Amino acid sequence: MPKITPEEIHELIEAALPFAVDTGMTVEHIGAGTCRVRLPYKPVFARPGGTVAGPLLMGLADFAIYVALLSRIGRVEMAVTTNLTCNFLRRPKPADVIGEARLLKLGKRLAYGEVSLFTEGEEGQGPVAHVTATYSIPPEG
Image 1: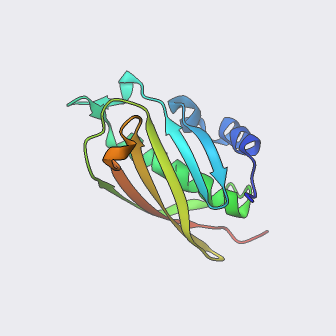
Image 2: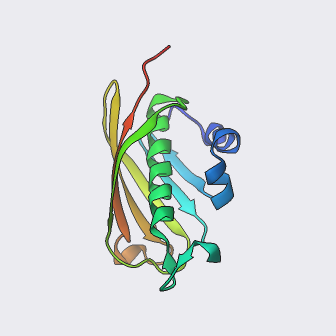
């Protein structure tokens, strides 16, 4: 059972994550240590070659791991990324990007997770990127 509801995540996004609001990032599903997020495609996200720009892919992945982490620890807003590694696997078409995240390890002070990014309609062709990240969890109090 997740420790944060979709409604609480939406409230957090509206109050504290303006980049998610501006880009249109949404949370489609939250599980205990997992989530599915979406970045709706906008023409301004394109880079030369007609593909989605890498920084947007990395931003969506970071957002996804943050949501997956909060699903396990609750609303701890000051959990922060300490490391993020992105492997671009194939060129994404100009379409919505979907991220499926899961936590692999949750410790007292650090969490580690992964995200697979897919373009909508091409999930069967494999991910466009694979991201791993470590988050620092602040001490209580």
